[in-house]
Length: 179
Image (cartoon, rainbow, N blue to C red):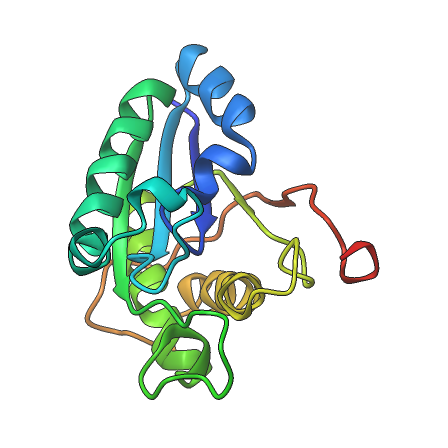
C-alpha cells in the first residue's frame, strides 16, 4: 500500500515557501503527495518591481498556474486547484472570495478531494495561518471542517464514500505574535 499525503495550501507558491523540503522528501521516498491549492492567487502581490507591470497583473492567474506546475514538477508532487478565489489582503474582503464564503461552502471542494484521494496524512497551517493572511487562516478552518465532513455521511452524499485520514499535522510557521 502506498502512503498518501495531502498538503493543503491557500495559494500557489505556498507549497514552495512552507514545507517544500518535507513534500519533496516524502515524494522521493515513494509517498503519493498531492498539494491542494485553495485559490489561484489572483490577488497576490508581485514583489519584483521589474516585472510589476500592467501586462503581468492582467496575466497573473495564468502566471501563477505555470509557476505552480513548475514547482510541482521540481518537488515531485501532484497538485490540484480547488477553484476558490483569492481574498487578497485588503479590507473589506471582496464578495465571493475564499475567506468570505460560508465555511461549509468553502470546504466542499476539499471534502470531495479528501474522499477521492483518501490521504493517510493531511498537512496544513495551524489556527494562525502561519501569518495573518485571511486565506491562510481560512485554509486552516476549511481543512478542519473538511476532515470532519469527509469522515461522515451527513454531508455531500453524492460524493465518494467517507474517509478519515489517520493524522493531521500543521506546518511550522510564524505566529501572529511574531508578525
